[in-house]
Image (cartoon, rainbow, N blue to C red):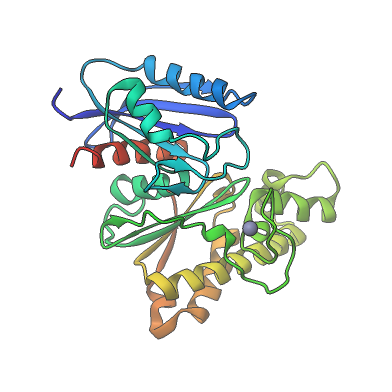
Length: 298
Ligand SMILES: [Zn+2]
C-alpha cells in the first residue's frame, strides 16, 4: 500500500457514487448505485457494498461526502434532510472499523468545492467560494489553499429579513436557498407559464428569447448576487464557482449576479472577483471525498 489510491464516496439522496481516485484526481473506476433510504441500517449496508465493489489491497483510505452538516470532532453527520442518517452513530469510526482503513468525512458541497479547487474551475486560484444550485443550495470554501471545514451552509444565509420560507426541514425565512435553487426556479416558472414548465424548460425558453423567462432568471440571479456579495465581503475570494444542476442557467443568472456583486463588494472586491461555472460536473463530490481521504494520510 503506497498511499497513491483511495476510494471516494459521494452519498446523494437518490444515488451513491463511489470511485477509485489517484493523487492527480484521476477517476480510475467508479460505480453508481441507488441510495437505500428505508433505514439507517440499510443505508450503511448500501455504503458498505459500494466500497466493497471497489476495494483492493492498494486502497489507502476512504473518504465520504455526506449531505448534512458534519461535526468533525465527533465524526458524526448532524442532520441529513433527505436520507436516514443521523448523529446516533459515529459514522467515521464505524467505517474505519468496518474496513480497517483511515476514513475522512466531509459535507458533500464542501467536498465538491475542494475538488473544483484542486482540479476544476479554481485550480489556478488560491482562495475560492463555491455554491451548488440543485434541489438545495450547498456551499463550500477553500481559503489560502485550505478547505474550510466548518459548516459553510451558505444557502442558509439570510438575504431578506422575514422573507419567503426556506426549503425542506429548515425553519428559517429569507435564506438564500429558496430564492436560487432549481426548485425555486420551477416554482416561479409554473406560476408564470403553468405546471408543464420546470427549471430546465425555463432556461430553454430564455435561450429562445422569451422575455418573461429571461426576467425570472434575472431576478434569481440578483438574489444570487446578494448572497455572493456577502460571501465576497467575508472571504474576499479570487473566484466564486457555481455548480449543481441549475448552474445550467449560466449567464442568464450569472450576469445579473455579477452586477449585484460589483455593487455590494467592498473596496473593489466585487469587481475583481470572477464568478464562473464549475467544471467537474457530477464527479466533483466523489473526487472531493477522495481528497478528504488523502488528507487523512498527510
Ligand atoms: Zn434555510
